[in-house]
Each structure stands twice: as C-alpha cells, then as structure tokens.
Length: 182
Ligand SMILES: Nc1ncnc2c1ncn2[C@@H]1O[C@H](COP(=O)(O)OP(=O)(O)OP(=O)(O)O)[C@@H](O)[C@H]1O
Ligand SMILES: [Mg+2]
Image (cartoon, rainbow, N blue to C red; front, top):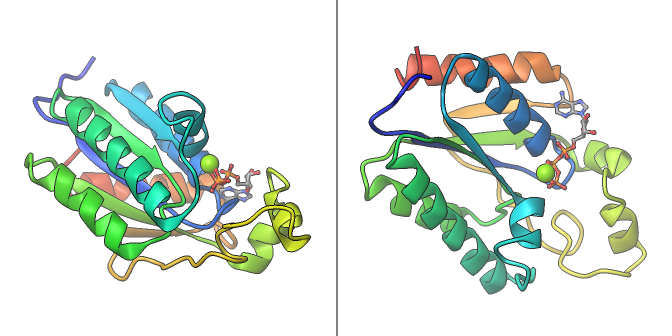
C-alpha cells in the first residue's frame, strides 16, 4: 500500500448519464491497482446513505454537495485519494467546494465529463430523462434545470467520442503531470 501523507480530490462533473461514475470507477480501479488508498463518493450512494433527505432545488443541491466536500476534505487530509462523482451543475457551488478542499492545502482536480445532451438522453441510464420529458419529475438537469460547464477544468473527457479506457488514461495522465501520483 502506498501511503500518501496527504491525498487529493478529483471532482467529476457532467450531465446525468454523461459517464461520471463509469470514468471515476475506472480511475479508482487503476489507482487501487497502483497501491493507492482510494474512496469513491458517488451521487447515488450519498443520496441513499448520508443525505437521504437531499432534494434537487438549487439550495438543496448546494447543501448536499458542501457536505460531500467536507467528507472529501476529512478523507483526503488523512492520505486518501477521493474521487467524487456528482452532476454538480452550478459553477458557483463547484467554486465553494474547491475552496473547502483547498483551504486545507489539498489539491483539487476538476474533471469535466463532456457528452452532448442528445447522447445523454439516448443513454438515459436511469430512465430519468424520459420521466422529465414527460413532466413526471422536476429539476432534471439538462431538461428543466441548467448545467453550467466548467470554464477551466483540469481535464475534459469526451465520453461521446472517446472510449472509457482512453478517458481513464487521460485522467491518470493529468494526475501524473500534476505529480499527484507516480
Ligand atoms: N466513453 C464512455 N465513457 C463513459 N461512459 C460511457 C462511454 N461510452 C458509453 N458509456 C456508457 O454511458 C453510461 C454512463 O453512465 P454513468 O452511470 O457512468 O453516468 P453518470 O454521469 O454517472 O450519470 P448520473 O449522473 O445519472 O449518475 C454507461 O452506461 C456507460 O457504459
Ligand atoms: Mg453516476
């Protein structure tokens, strides 16, 4: 096991069904095989366990994500590599998250998981776009809620045109370039 004095946080943001969990899990698997201590915090899991009462309004999403940021901070300051996969649609909230992490001198790497809305609707992994398009659910990012893409992410992965493997490699390469992993 490689022991880092301090970990770091990789934050995956993108539309629902863009591939955040898929790429984050691929990166996690690779880092674990390299001997790093890794934790994945994923929207679905956090909403089921820690934040079962979280809603989808702008403020409810904000509070939900700031809690996640604090958990990531506690883990990372103890040497864990924390991979966070959340739609996290608002730019100002992502800036708040980054601040919480960096206040503790923990490196924060933003990954924009890019995929067109059309392709995300085609994938519709959880059937939520279908429901939103029928008006059965509200606050669906991409349909009746906005998504604000990052302006200067450390990495952009294009899941529409590049394979999962290529994208996992791209993230790892950036982590190496930033000297966060060897
Ligand atoms: N190049 C690619 N990278 C990532 N996922 C891809 C790619 N090509 C196809 N997919 C498929 O797209 C889907 C992405 O689903 P995934 O659950 O990872 O999205 P998500 O962004 O985590 O969505 P949510 O916000 O709903 O959790 C998966 O079924 C995956 O197999
Ligand atoms: Mg996911």
